[in-house]
Image (cartoon, rainbow, N blue to C red):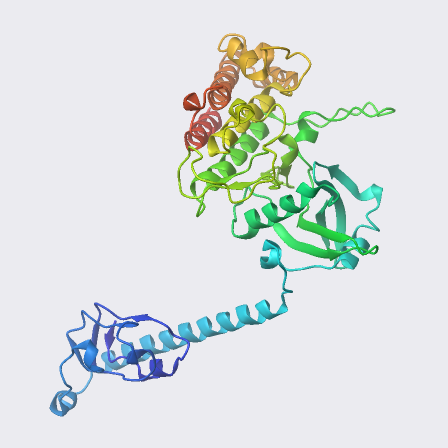
Length: 445
């Protein structure tokens, strides 16, 4: 930037700091507004500036210097444009700050960490769910129930998680989930829209969190579709190979964000198919942060105290073995859960399946089949998809090899992530990179 410093900058009373260093400004430095504070205004590196407060240590302005020659037409035009742009920028900044202040006055005060969410009343949720009708019940968990609801006269479909406050841990779960989702944003994390903390029609405490409604339900429903009595002969819904791989990568990316890209590492603690929701584009969204832990510092070894604790550490089958011996919650615990989830996605077998007894488990079952017998242990739906694809392409040898090689690579990632010994587990960032590479090779073939 060049020319003189615009005088109108003195009038912006909300400006707290201004850095004009190392430009080509010239002439007298203003002496009002932010320019009265040498620690808040930086002007060094502009050799032609003069005047200002003594702390700037600039030479005095001389009248003859100011009168010497006139600015060219080009210089005047540039100064006018720069001044105009600066003025517009500061006006927009002030408008934004005013909007934030106005929005803040609309929020209700509360003692919980849900203050950062917009609030909605119990009466509105009661109406949206038709009185929390069983017809709108779409899921149940450890700490409450999830209902489908409609807001704004049918214009917005939402999912409402109502906490069962008879369970004392539900209060902690509500606080943990609000705290976890307060400042994190990622395309693969379920988005919170609203929060409700008040009383119901009986005068009892009522707490709920409102999410975006995921039209394709949970990953659990797709991997293990319920066989209803009297069901028609319609084939149950199933996921293709590419959909499963995409969803697995979505989940891994969400974990990588929580573990490595937040201000403090966040541990989900309860990763499983029912906590992975699918939107209309079949993109995976990790939800249900009721057991989340915040780890101070950046250590992946779980050092330090947890700031949130609900007393539980996950779900049987997905919980890492070290938690059973009293190990602190850490990010490697989520990596184990992801490994088990990945194996379940491609084998179609739950880790709690009756076939796994004693020392037998899903991890060992898959590990023993690698690499030669993977086709025998994967979900039959995928095998049928591969056969159908081979017939239509009439290139069975090539496609069969691609299918098998990709399966081996994916299951090896799952086995590495779900290793019993934590030190042998794969880093979640490496898992993301490997699965993205597998997907790229498949698309190129």
